[in-house]
Length: 58
Image 1 (cartoon, rainbow, N blue to C red):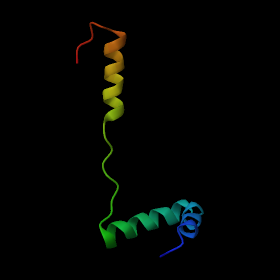
Image 2 (image 1 turned 120 degrees about the vertical axis):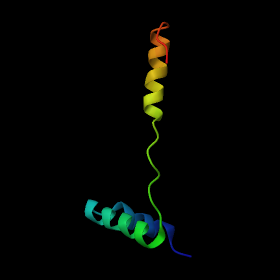
Image 3 (image 1 turned 135 degrees about the horizontal axis):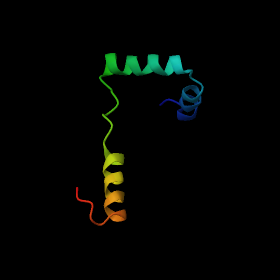
Image 4 (image 1 turned 180 degrees about the vertical axis):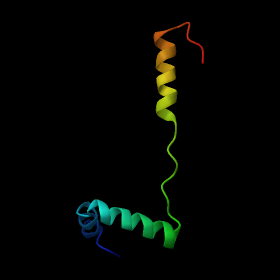
């Protein structure tokens, strides 16, 4: 099995351009993509508003 520490060392030393190239290879050759961002922050802001302003309705 590969040396995980060596892989980690290589990854943390990649440039931004190399990271983008790696992401493209993972997508094209392996079908690995970043999951879509969730709107969790938006919901938490609305919840905070509701706590701060009891008359605020979602």
